Length: 400
Image: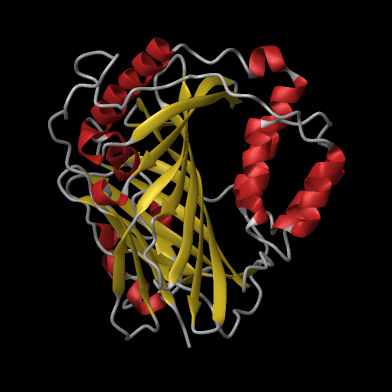
């Protein structure tokens, strides 16, 4: 039996600001930020960390504890290439755990620059407010553009994180203010897609597999939309690609969320949907007031729903479109877990965003093909995929 998983973020409509908040600027839509000092446990030792790593294959839920300890306690040991290799092996190359370990290593190696003091409540609120305005302003001023997604899709049985690549996709994505994001499948494993498979943003209904949308404008705009009522808390500092950042944790409750998970047992079965809450972290550049990384973890997933976990990490970088710089995704990793009866599976999509350019008003996404993008760089090419497993989880996203 084939599963089809859907992870979708509904398009965002930016409305007026909600009620003012206590102890902040009158127009801020954010809840009060608290920076009360907490008693901190000693840093993780190498022995503790390795012991927990070895528990991961049999107990995948240990990842949450590992990530939390790395963030709150830090480490007192050097991260070597051997240790990085062990983390990749024991965690199934888990992207969130890798990111968090590297953050902890930067703080250990250079505590002065990598962990500059957390801002005061007033400073944190002001930075968040500037970021909200910059993010929503950029979403409204985004030009019409075209980009290619290079997606490596992997599958693991149970909760093993033993990832097996089952295919590689090339997808053209257009964005227009008037129409949002539209998708066209260009190729599968290097072979041109059939006309039926490539059809519109619903190509996944013909192809199957895990797909996603909303990584461009809508996810960040939705998070900062006052109607979402996201609650933020400054928790850390970090350096991302040479930029000094403040790290905020956030929570969006299900009742205010627009994030949707959808699932189907086969290509022809009806879809079931669930609106879920979500939480995670954002890395905000202190100088530019822009989000450089977004971590998103689904929460409040209804009991009994086939998808049991969903998360994503998106890195944003400056790209030039029509001789102007815009902050847009450079890479995203999306992971989901699902179950049907006694069987459970995991899927992971590793997405590279390449060849951003202006999308002319006279051009249609259906007319786009591989020749409309620059050739892939040699370092971006990957080995051919293995034979797809008999049971491959598959995810698609409904139109926004």
